[in-house]
Length: 617
Ligand code: X8Z
Ligand code: ZN
Image (tube, rainbow, N blue to C red; front, side, top):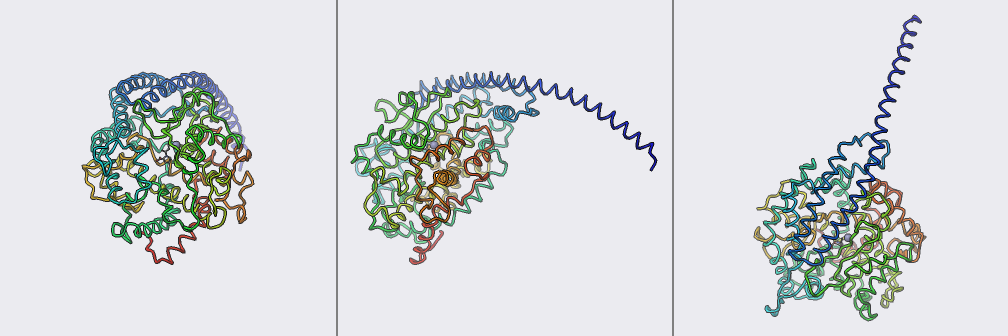
């Protein structure tokens, strides 16, 4: 080849490079300027957004702790005012070309702000949406039922008498009465509101460029394939659930006879819980080793003169023992930990972040029971998360995903409920410290942790289908019971129709709170447990003295220090990065959970085989 064309090409290339370089520099200067502008802008809106969030939380707290129409209207006014301001900020924000920013932290803050959510609704629609949710919450929270024996006594509440009956009664007609009355008091009153609510949620989703509200809810998981991942997790865990289900049905048949079908779905009112989401309350009726009686923690709490405050202090002490935070002074001043008797409040437990770095609260109608003792740990886990990420920029003050937030307190309860910890609280009975006692303990845990999973899955499978228009109001209840049967293997005690509306008898459905977060939490808390136990030297794979279900991280700061590293990140990175900081892996994965319950799985499988129990339904 001749040299001349080569030279020409060379010169042309230099010219081109030179030209594109200059153009690139110009381009660069423009974007750097835009990025600097973005950084200044974000500081301003972070401050304004935190202030607005504080105002919104105040208004929501006032309604949730005193369910009057006046407080609802005040809340609607505050929402309208804040939505206007947020929309104005959003419009400015979207004029900035943040997609090209180099600084990934800054870009992520813009990205998180770019989804307006329900604030995108026009003012009257937003007001109506909030009014509907407020009304549904109130109907749910003020629902009472009549006594089975005495139908003039009609002030039985969920937290008190109803929970107690479901826990201790084995009188099938009474259980059916309670189950039905609770649903009769809510479903028919809420059905039309719910239909309108679905329409408004979808309208908001469309305004945010989502196909429907399910897509908007799932956006928090930042993974377009997340639904498929949930299904994989469920299929990994299902064999264990099937064994628990078969074992439980076999024993319920012995208690209730003909009411229970040997091979069918279990009647939902016999499982010790209003929604059959946790079967722990009936577990003591058929422990793997009935001679090794389980500790009744409720009795121990009462014997040891625990008050709601003492229960909170005990939970706090655990967190502090692993070098996490004590609850700040405002927490003790502002929280509501007992049901006030002079007004209606939402009793379902919740933890609140008032977005100013110092005001964090729990609202809970605490009673001195085992279940409440663990709910306190759960709620305090939320507060620990809030405290750890309080110094992050405002949009990052959130869980890595909603499931992470739900997992923190529960993670601690895995230690508290371990056979090693209960004796430290003076809460173990004789025979607790041997392998048979351990198996009983693991069974009790399975009856809550494994049993919740299919329930948590279908609460949102059902809502996703509704938001996607696959189920219409004339099929709401039918589809609900199809899913209940298919995934949980439970059935209603009497025929249901579309005049009933059973899903809304669950708080989160009435209160517009997504539920798949608990499914996520109940899987990943075992991954977290494995990681902090390893860090604390309390777990070693393959070591029979350091099994996962035995681990207690109490007084092990190494566990808390590792956990804090992840909590402090808040939502600053996509959740797989946060997961990696704590566990070294980027995926949600059921193997830690299956390892934890392995001895129970082996035991149940053998026992069901020996008893020729049919597995499935
Ligand atoms: O709602 C809760 C917490 C408040 S975030 C008490 N939980 C779910 C429920 O009660 O249905 C915790 C576990 C499941
Ligand atoms: Zn929670």
